[in-house]
Image 1: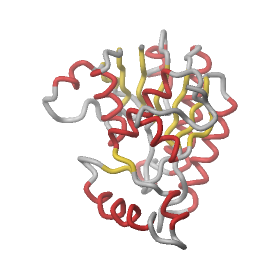
Image 2: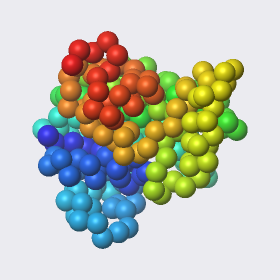
Image 3: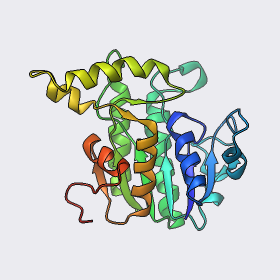
Amino acid sequence: MKLLVLGGSGFIGREVCRQAVAAGHQVAALARSGAPRGDAPWLEAVRWVVADALDPGAWAGHLEGCAAVVHCVGIIAERPDHDETFARINGDAAVVAAGAAARAGVGAFVFFSAAGRPPLVPRAYLEAKRRAEAAILAAGPRPVVFRPGIVYGPGRLPAYLPAALLRAGMRVPGVRGLARRWRPLPVAAVARAALRAAADPRVHGIVEVDDIARLGAGAGVAGVAE
């Protein structure tokens, strides 16, 4: 399977690329800063494309023959002086990419959204994500919208503490529902779920955190027959 991973140098994107290479897929990855640092063999197996996600003219050629796009581009803090706003990065970039994928006839578009708005993060963060979701669900390729909660793993140490607290909260009446909505998942499971969703035509639409966990564990999504 040929894949294009947008945001391939980020926390989730790197793991998607690593697993895709290990599974024998042909992988191209878009990253404004190029390949991540390191000497892991999988890094050289990826075709790294240095370009801005909002400039499809610079990367749309890599969509040819793609079975799926996995969109991992996103920010949790704005830098307006660098044109890094929620509206542009969390919203416009995904809308532009979904349109390019539709025009290229890509089979599936897997978009990493969010379960909700993280604490202390402006409302514009989630508004941009939801706007992107709506555009992707209306676009041509089979849409898969992931809504994970907390994703933790090597390279994101600050996520381990809230992940532990949420796991504990899932056993406490009164906060169980909120904790379950933000159910923490390891990045390896989340990436595995994305690759499975990209390959399985039965997976489509919005995929909430429990179904992301099921996909990551090798089980089916609720309502989708195995």
